[in-house]
Image 1 (cartoon, one colour):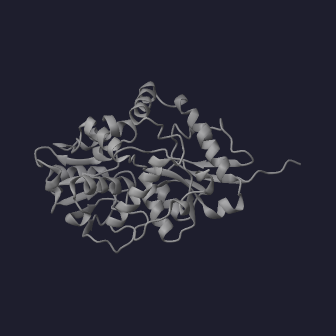
Image 2 (image 1 turned 60 degrees about the horizontal axis):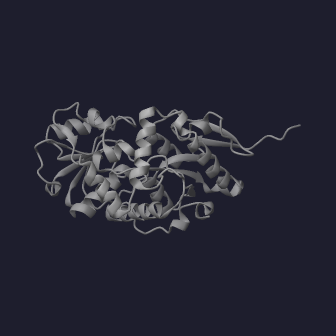
Length: 328
């Protein structure tokens, strides 16, 4: 009688970079994979923190906060979503002459603790000396694993919209001058570098709403000068699962890498060309699933930003965050 393979549950939206694994073209040696892809990214993060799934795609900022609070999760060096967050900062055309004018204003975001928001605030801090405490904050959506002792005033919608539907309220409030700007989930990868994508059009449904930063050369220059290439989502797993199956982390990393090599089967021709251009501009592949110097620098930057924003208290050693196999 054949021995039943252990079943590993995966919570992650279908993505060209993981589709070959989901579709069964790539196997995890010695394990069966049970995939759930029916929720928005934010809800997957929420459900994983609540104890669902052995392995899940997770907000990088949320992951750091769970680790500081002692939750037993550990990351794989697998990064589906990356890219600069400047184009995620929206304002109403003609209302600001310089980003420094955001000081003292009310800024909106879909979640105070969201990774995209933490990265955008960190950019404003480093490049324009705009501290998080220099502004008041409005939140349209539901938080995922966030503390209550924040260093800033945060106004919230009493009944937040469902996960994935938070942008519309922010765009309307920016257009009406109730908010000076809004930090939203946006287009990642080459779209974050070069522009395009769906988010500017979604926000522009309300008059005058557009990205505050649109100069492609400036954005590329920022990435090259700082050596930071934001990590938005990463793959995480329960430490309990890693302990139960000590060979699983290495096999998962290998399976995700092999699935990534087949991603072009699922990308459009324009996407293939865009990601090729992204690699050429960066001089490396940000989706190689390695914990290289860029990744280490980026993780430390996000840690620093969250401390400034009142979301973390300590600097977390990288060795405490990633599986041992990430450093091999």
